[in-house]
Amino acid sequence: MSETWSVDEHLEDILRSVRPLDPIELNLLDAQGCVLVDDVVVPTALPPFDNSSMDGYAVRIADVEGASEEFPAVLGVIGDVAAGSTGLPTVASGQAARIMTGAPLPPGAEAVVPVEWTDGGTGGGPADAMRAHSSAPQDATGQVRVHRPVVAGQHVRVKGSDVRPGTVALKAGTVLGPAQVGLLAAIGRGSVTVRPRPRVVVLSTGSELVAPGEPLGPGQIHDANSFVLTAAARAAGAIPYRVGAVADDAETLRSTIEDQLIRADLVVTSGGVSVGAYDVVKEALSRVEAFAVEGEDERDGAGDVVEFRRLAMQPGKPQGFGLIGPDRTPILTLPGNPVSAYVSFELFVRPALRTLMGQEPVRRPSVRARLTGETPVSSPEGKRQFLRGAYTPPADGDDELGTVSAVGGAGSHLIGALAQANALIDIPEKTGRLKPGDEVTVVPLD
Image (cartoon, rainbow, N blue to C red; front, side, top):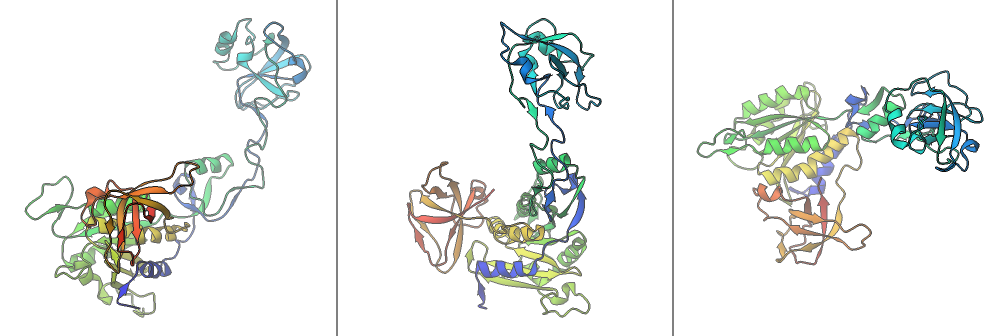
């Protein structure tokens, strides 16, 4: 392979070495954000019985046919049915049972008349009826006047109308969000088998870095990278651990990474991967013995080798990748400029995380858009450029392309422009110039 790698070659090498995490059984709330390993089949109907969707009266259809304000149907009230009721009364001809939302439909009843369509059994109007139903059910006897007819099944949640037994509630590969957790709880699942959210250790390197909130001294800058990468890892579904900035000392960096491996499914560093005199990440990780595993062949595809490469891309030319430690933990070393680090995360780290989680697709989908703006956009010859962009999708039902404009310049330090962008404009290696109106490939971000 050539000395300079393409973006796709580097990513493919990473994905060849990263495997999905082993499945584990987790309680529902612990499984939020994880990916289902197996289809979940519905064991019982949901809802499990016919129940009322309104406060009102359970009636037979024939008894309220033609009912109106002028000529109400007068029914005898035989009792109350509350949610969770057992020993249900049977509704016979000329009778009604007062029923609460969620309560089982009693035998003989065919529909529910909302309380607002009755006098509430009080002899008053709908307002009185609402007040009559605002308290807990009481023994109900006497009569109720019904002012409107209903059809069979009206205001009734039919057994199995949500999900039926034997059907697939959630497919393997589903990411469990709040709605999916709620469905699992509703069908009685207390735990599920999932691939866990990967644990990601994030650290940045540089003796010049100072934590946000601390005053800057001469030649110092605030550590933005560990924050943007930690936030990006969390947004991608991982559990991130931000270590912060490590000084430019190879032994300190090796020791820090070694200490962190116990809680890492993947390690991400930023800075120190170029060709400078203080590129501490290269110095610390280039040596195979830095994280030696006894008995491993250093070149068998599974040993502790971190390779540092030049990629035909801008920003983000210097990159590194390898497997380290006894568990062969993947480590991705990213450039130190903030934009380079973030773009590299999107292109390489995020797909690796999605692979660990068993999520598809691993890459963000791209779309075509029309370039807008007042000036042409240039790209360096032989490099695949990723410009920050402001993307506007087409209107719903519109066959036209969306539009995108470049935000800020090409400089890899321009984090102010990055904060205004919602997409990356992907410009191929052989495209040197684009003018307003040209079609481009866009990768929308979150």
